[in-house]
Amino acid sequence: MQNKWLKVLSPLVNDPNLLHFNRRSVSAGMFAGIFAAFIPLPIQMFLAISLALVARGNIAVAAASTWISNPFTYGPLYYFCYLVGTFFLGEPLGADGQPIAFELASIVEHIWTIGKPLLLGCFIIGTILGFISYIAVRNLWRWHILRSWNTRRLQRKANNKG
Image (cartoon, rainbow, N blue to C red):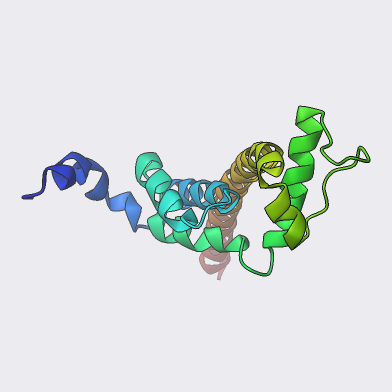
């Protein structure tokens, strides 16, 4: 490799787990993608791929799983994250003591006051759902393998009897 930055990244980029589908790489890719999906930036896929590189997860799974947050789900997801952030900060930000409603005019007007609880909520929810997806993928993968082994064992038993 000629480029010095590519030389630094070569141990990461040359890892076969980055595109291979196994329990470890897919679960790490899911964590990276789900976590990045909750970061309210337009670079979610790049963040997910970067996290997958560091975690040695599947980069295709990481990029694809960021799409749980999309133009149809942004509003409800980020409003929920905002509510979680205000809960943990203990400070509703509206004049009436209630969380600020997400309306376009309200977002533009209160962008600096919405930012702190939104980012905190996104980090908390992204981390929790990322871990849940990581554990779910690992357990579902294990369950599938054990079920396949059991099916083969039963088929061998049936073939040996006949």
